[in-house]
Image (cartoon, rainbow, N blue to C red; front, side, top):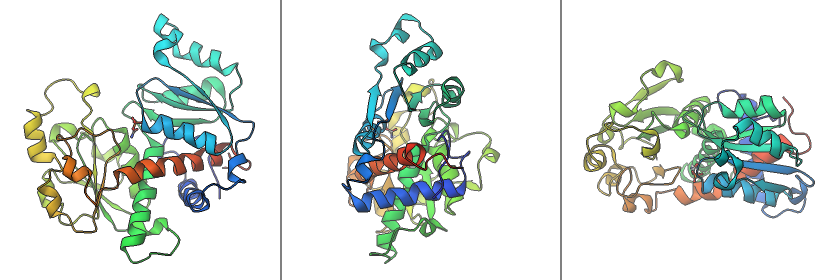
Length: 322
Ligand code: CP
């Protein structure tokens, strides 16, 4: 298996790196609490530098470091000197002096992980940068889909194989324009051979689709939901929107929400995903989020295995090989 030196974006890592992260995550999950895995990051310190809110990504990276035997330094923006006007660069260069082997960074500016790499020269893992990418979310989503199709394509008992995504129809529905999760997933799923369709209010889709690999659009969910193998719902990102992207919450739910009525359109084996946090009753009804086809909590669980795979690949012995 080969791993990159950083994980800044799905777009900038090779197919081999993607397959290595996926295959290693399945190995970790199969092994569970293995003492050899529990010492991979022995003596290594990871800075968890989050300046945007997070529950899933932050806590799963912390759990992953602990399961690999490493230590984390946390960062609380509101109690830091960033709040006194210190720059991002001065802040991270200061913390770096305490001894840091890698940085997991979430920040509102697209491209900030690249700056961190220039400033510090240690491995950087992008935990979500503005409207750009969220690569570990896409990797854990792919892991979850591969597991799901391995069971439903009567491959149960066989080792999960990323090739199972070839030809699968995945509908990414919602606020694509502001979604780093959608960007990373579009690139990753297309690279793994899935057929990706995006949809949502026309105002919330990117204007220039030529920037993405081979995707199609379907604005009306009811025309495609019967055929999909998985529907990936996106959070309406109010914090990145001005006013006026859609008329009202009621209309959004009516036209683009995965409502309790719409789940009846899905094939019985079609999967429902959402990266979380969810706006209940807006982009997804509680009945859809909690139905047997929903993999939302499986995504959360797989987040730890995938982040272990990313940290071990990049920082563990043999990591950083191109
Ligand atoms: N999916 C995701 O990134 O969730 P958090 O914002 O809670 O980390």
